[in-house]
Amino acid sequence: MDTALSVIGGRWKATILWRLSERPMRTSELRRSIPAITERMLIRHLQELVRDGVLTRIDAGTVPPHVTYELSEYGQTLAPVVGALCEWGRGHQRRGGA
Image 1 (cartoon, rainbow, N blue to C red):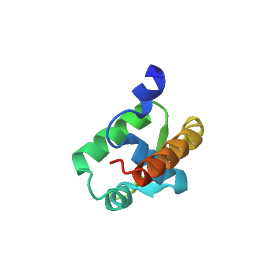
Image 2: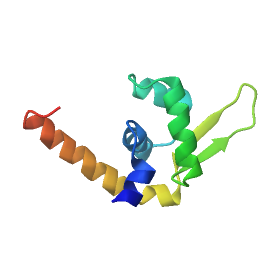
Image 3: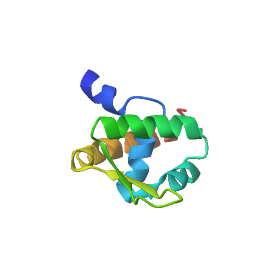
Image 4: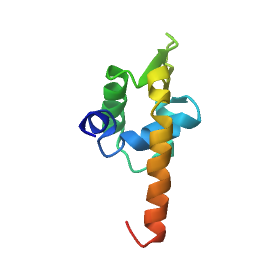
């Protein structure tokens, strides 16, 4: 459990992974899809997820910068876990949870 949470723990990491499980996205797309996250926190979590090998950062090498993030092969193994957490959360909301 500790190992899993060290990779996906944090207020926004599971949400970022959930969004990227649908398709690769640019930073600005992720920011718009998660309105409550600050840009600073998004960048921090993206950097940590890339460092941990969960995400792949694709830099097109253009000006202005065009960076896309996607789940790495390793990160794709987390998709079912994040999906299960999402489903559990939906059930919890129906019960009157947060």
